[in-house]
Image (cartoon, rainbow, N blue to C red; front, side, top):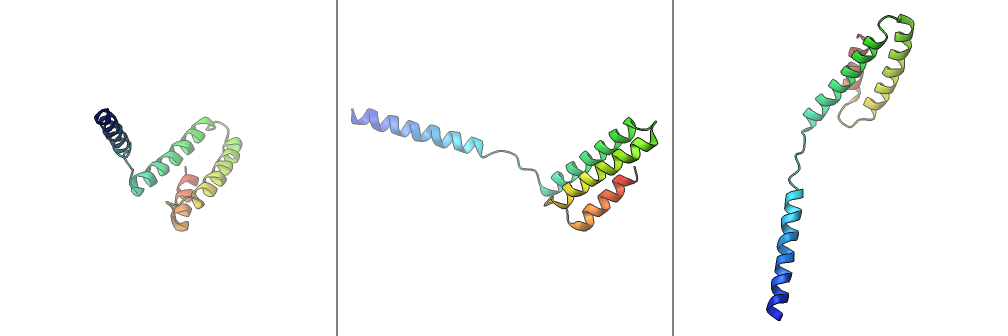
Length: 96
């Protein structure tokens, strides 16, 4: 009887170790990759905005200003970008 309890206890420990060791193997992206993905996301969104309003310059200007304000706020609060990088990206987005 004691042997059965010990075997059940050891099996439970084995499965717990197996479970937690497999969940720790998630891939973590480097800071450079995350930063590049964010830059590409902002560029893609700005290009979509320009394509959507390409026939209406007045509305395009309004939408670009709103988007640039939003993006600037997000970038200045993002830990991956310092102030000069955020400003450079906003200038690049504004030139689209």
